[in-house]
Length: 372
Image (tube, rainbow, N blue to C red; front, side, top):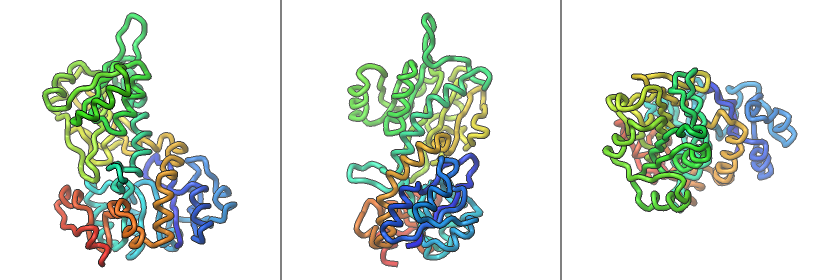
């Protein structure tokens, strides 16, 4: 198979879909790899790093898309990239279609086969291709929120860990999954008072055991959120419904319950955000204010630490990428039901139910797509 890796064009996105190591693995199996010039620069990989291992270097994204059977990326294809997709071409990347009707319609119209990292599953019910970036985003959330809390950035001027004689910041993490656990670990390590909310009592019990009293766990319902809001300096939204739009956990009316200069960090913004007042921002312009509350809603948080994120993502995606290349997407998905769960679009049809529900679009099942 001819595998293509274009340079990411989303603003302030420095990750790359293939590391040189992943390219080498594919080449060693007899596949051809073409990488757009400069694609790896933001993550610390040069064109020579790829070329020395046998990859071809293309001068443009157009050349990559025109030549490749499978496109491997990081972020969802932007509008100019979607125009270059063609019928029968395989796209393997993050998609986050539920809050993005334009992308969804363009992918359907292209006739391509699109497999989304974020809906591939594993035998434990997890999301193995989302997990490494969730770890990164979760760990970044408290430090990004701490920056936003600084007075010069519009925040209340509270230091997360406090100092002797001055209390530390109060942080609520809504969601105790991969993102929430990572966020809680870093926030507690920075000395903040941390409360984690989740609707799974076994998960809360697990967190209580793991953190050994270094944080507070609380069952998540509307009353609990409303009780906490007036005391919080930062709220980190870390909820996920696989493939679907994120639920809205805090309404605009509830912002009035928070202290002026408090911070909301929305790690679920790729799936539409979990606060009513959330809108996607970039690393270049990461924060905005609504009713006195600072919002940090960067849609590609892991892009800030591009080298770590790229290597972590490639470690997770490479086995699936190689299976798709070795077997073709249909056979690979027939052999692995968890990879089949990643199929979102095929041959002009939407194939993921949660996206269809979110956008009001017709869909077929993934098993039906295998028969097309």
